[in-house]
Image (tube, rainbow, N blue to C red):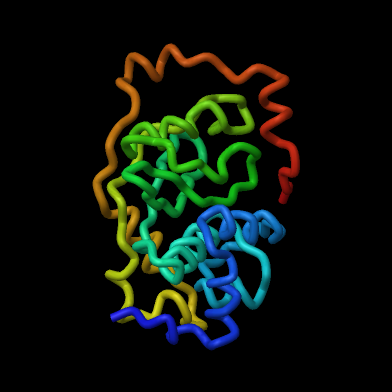
Length: 202
């Protein structure tokens, strides 16, 4: 069973000081995005003070847990593009999300969405590849990371590849019918450039 003292006292104080999901988002926003092929635990993210999409979502799930929320992830799958993972939370019966991305517009979502489909669709227009194709296609069911407590996912010094590997095994719900996907237009130049503000290139 999860105990806040799975983190050190200093780590726990730092996470409690975030107070709200938006506070967690602000901490992630202050961290530079890194391009490494890594799967750091939340403790490692705190130590390194940098994260990419997957690590940020896992970190956010742990931070939300310290604040009293269940540690939930949602996996968004794309076509001809990389997937995106977000930490989700519910307030007053409505869904919100905490996330980090190398693309502008794929981060925080206010808790105003009635369903997970509605939340996922809020990412659709900002989700594109470098060919300007709109690429978001499916979303998973919520994954409660407490299922990995026996692997010390929050504090291990080992990489937590078992989390993304699990996300690959679960069912995802399509957002579009094939006929709808075929009719999608490419992103306009202005929106494309706006989405790349702050983008880090390899």
